Amino acid sequence: MRSNSALRVGLIGAGRMGGQHAGFLARDQGVELVAVADPVDDRIAAEHGARQFTDHRDLLASPGLDAVLVASPNHLHVPMALDCIAAGVPVLLEKPVATSHAAAAELVAAEAAADVPVLVGHHRRHHPAVTAAREIIRSGGIGDLVAVNGTWLTRKDDAYFEQSWRREPGAGVLLINLVHDLDLLRYLCGEITGVQACTSNAVRGYDVEETAAVIVRFAGSAVGSFLISDAVVAPWGWDQATEDDPTFPYRPDGSCYSIAGTRGSLSFPQLAHYYHEGRSDWTQPLSVRFEPKAAGDSYSNQLAHFARVVRGEEEPAVSVADAARTLAVVEAVSRAAGSGVVEPIGAQ
Ligand SMILES: NC(=O)c1ccc[n+]([C@@H]2O[C@H](COP(=O)([O-])OP(=O)(O)OC[C@H]3O[C@@H](n4cnc5c(N)ncnc54)[C@H](O)[C@@H]3O)[C@@H](O)[C@H]2O)c1
Image 1 (cartoon, rainbow, N blue to C red):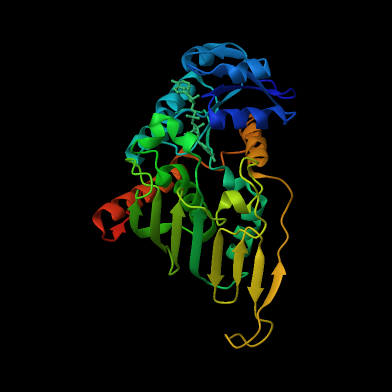
Image 2 (image 1 turned 90 degrees about the vertical axis):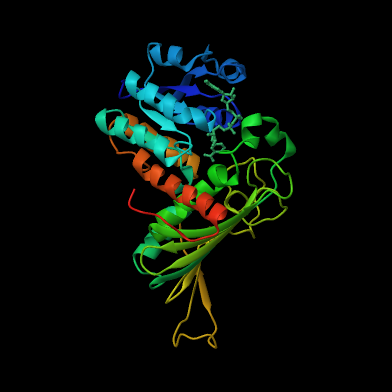
């Protein structure tokens, strides 16, 4: 791999997310999109002057490739990442890392056995507000963590569901969207040790869930709740509250997480930090200060981190094993919704 010139990157899967990745690659001087693999769509390759392949194995076998981004449908993530590892090509693999925790296990083993890094695309972990909030929580800035509430409520466009895989089990709001929030809650608030949940598909009636309410227990004594739906009109969720993805109009008054501790609380992503100046009880006025955060967005930071991973300067911030743990939590949510009972999550 060349160390001083732009990394030559291939893209596998040229759909919605692949198109966004191509845009992020185009605005980063340190990387260059040189090849695309997609069996049906050659528009991104044409637009970016990259070579087009219909089979990702031909792309992986082509000369002059430093790294690959995989943005194919979920069920192809594990086999494609295994092919990347076998070809010795570092990979940024879109989330969810697999369609099941069991399916991820094969990839965990392959990654451990080979010296080929895999970064899982839980891009939100790279957001500056996440970095700042984690530091505040971990340093005891709000006291001991007690209660967490989160929301991701929005309405997906009808065209989104024209792709048949999005209407099939495994592509509902749990695995596509809640996986991001549960991953972040693990990162911000600690491991999740148990969940309760109920789900609904009452609006569209597809085979996939579109709405869920989840109760979470964290390691330690904190508890949380999360409400998610892709079938409602509402401003509360990561995508509206951050300016991370220009596809989603920004709502500066939107928020997605309320994180409360014994000495204060944080509203996210604004990082409004509420606390008492003196005596601390509910009759006292709350003070608020807006905590600082660095500039930047998650996708740019994720790509810059991936470039450092490819160059051997950093370990993947989100490993396959780490992402598999988030998947175990999503699966527990699914089981809990089916059973109606509390599902324990054992050591993974
Ligand atoms: N990080 C995020 O926030 C985020 C956001 C959206 C989607 N995603 C993830 O990105 C992935 C793709 O989602 P999408 O919304 O772009 O889906 P999509 O259906 O729009 O695109 C998938 C693309 O993969 C292509 N494809 C199918 N089989 C292929 C194969 N064998 N080889 C190469 N390409 C193949 C399809 O032709 C299509 O162009 C999913 O895993 C999804 O979870 C992540």
